Length: 289
Image (cartoon, rainbow, N blue to C red; front, side, top):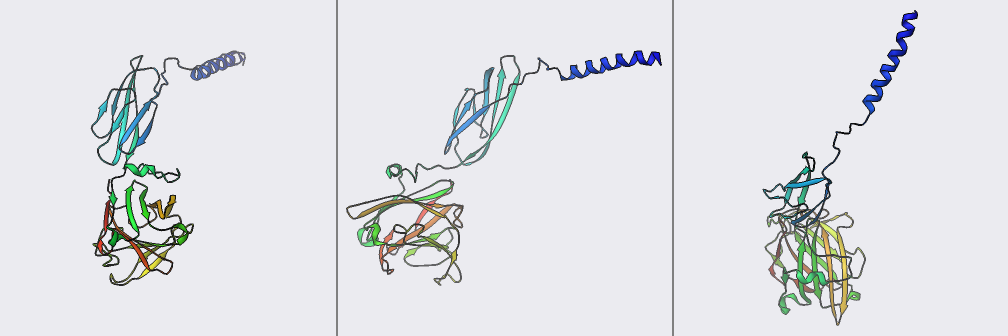
């Protein structure tokens, strides 16, 4: 028993020494990580590299492009998902790396909540119907990004007039589905958006075509916030305004193209104007990028 009593304290000391040794920080382990953030505008992506204690960098952008800049800007040529990787060589010679997924899609300069229409000045997708075909419709522009399809219009009217707007949308770009109408040839109209767009908050309602293509038959679609009305300006009998349709809340707007025509009517549904023009081919907007 005396021998055991002498051995036990030594065993306890040994266990304590092993425990503290296992918890002691290893000063030879390098804890530096690759760190960077991104800012994106459409196809252009800027990589802000904040990796510490590094002397050189090697980027791959997932599309075959490379760079040795510390914080490069890379312009992708197509939309899609790309894996961008940064390999950094530290001052002690060790190499570390990190990756991120980049979603590239078309962007738009249009901002709806800036109380301005100046951002439309750079948009070249422009339709101006002749006076006899467009009637009170003067001009329109269109754009899109991954989230929305944007409309800008100039109409000879007033906000107080309470005009009814009808948007005929061929969202699947297929004339063998949806309503066929001579008013806007070339499309089969899958959705109708209708209501007093300018005078009534949330005035547009959404309807989906059903039945034969010759039948004006639409069922109400109860989806909220499928559109946003932006800046509205009224001067000298002309109303200029912008709006956006949410691509995730109008069926089919995730496809490659949108064909459409717009009618503006008075409160009694007497037609006053047409875009792109009465009995004209529907407007086709490429939304594939």
